[in-house]
Length: 306
Image (cartoon, rainbow, N blue to C red):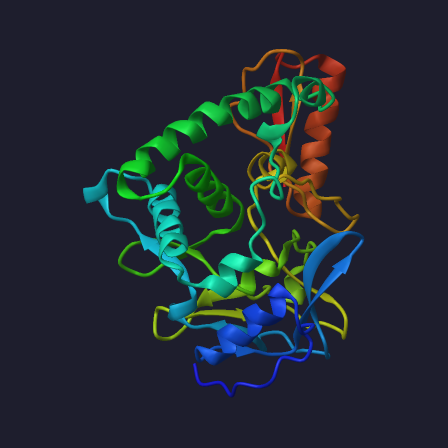
């Protein structure tokens, strides 16, 4: 992808984000019509001018990206390989502008950091149990990484948290890749609104460049000046967002969701979950839900909603 680098005045001088954008540009990348703002206490990426769907916003060169490809010879998962790579970058002082922009461990809280009292307030026993089970799982993962790095346990734990909450997956055509991508990872999550067939498909906003190594961020739809640039981190509902990213999403009226409604006290799942994704499917699923409420259904049956 051929782009022309331009200045990045939208990133306030003296901030870690400005240093980050300047570094990406200096390394041959591109930072276009975007700026970093904090709105309602949440940092995000916003466009400085109107942009069209598909317009290039950011291109990050491979020298600024921390990546790991699947490699079974190490006996580590892809997430663990990237954790080791991030620890190595920190130890060697590589990608320093990016490292300076990352939060501390305390600055990236997850559901597993909640107290038992706080977890009880979720009124979601299954999710609370998953959260309670995460610390020993993460500790075991970090212990598998430590023999391959020269770092304190707290550094490995920090790196694991950064990878868990910020990394992106790519299919290189040969293997799966997991990457930490500066500037692009400043974009917040948003489930896109439900669209009709006439609206056409939304563009995938993040992809590998034509060289297979750089990463490009494009507008997935037309955006007005000041609108936020968002990604969709995952399509598994607020439970998984809380568990792996530490936040839940406020669902709008025109927006699909990805949730599970459990009917009754049993944990027995419904053999065929109901998927809601169109007006017709919504009507059919609501009718089935009414039948369950009237007839009782099978205790513990679940309805998954898209």
